[in-house]
Length: 175
Image 1 (tube, helix red, strand yellow):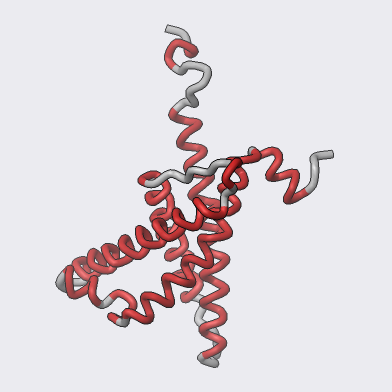
Image 2 (cartoon, helix red, strand yellow):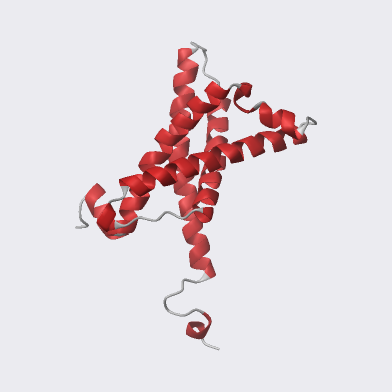
């Protein structure tokens, strides 16, 4: 059996799909990592904590990796759909709300599992997410949305015009 019989020309191989997913996960983790490290830096300087503990940035990067994983799960469950004829902002706004709901829900589940690992009750640990303060969870949701929104606009734009055009618009044409 030839390779073309195993993988039709229009269908990418499993290896290519895995590479693509790994690139997405890495770039999304880097994107979230920059945001979360900036927020961590701002929070530590606002508290006037000196010296600034570098471990906090490690936690920010771990949180970025988890958030990237949650975002990719949300995209797999609810793929981005854009239509050039109707613009991308409206549909992506609705999708961004869905993604934030999924990300927050997965954060609650993560808090429950973390509690179980540390010998606490699952539901009690879930309820402690965001210090158990609904306003804090709302504030985190807004910040998450502000982080996710530009990413979704980029992905939507990329889907409509293609990767080559997107890179040309952002960085200029290849010379």
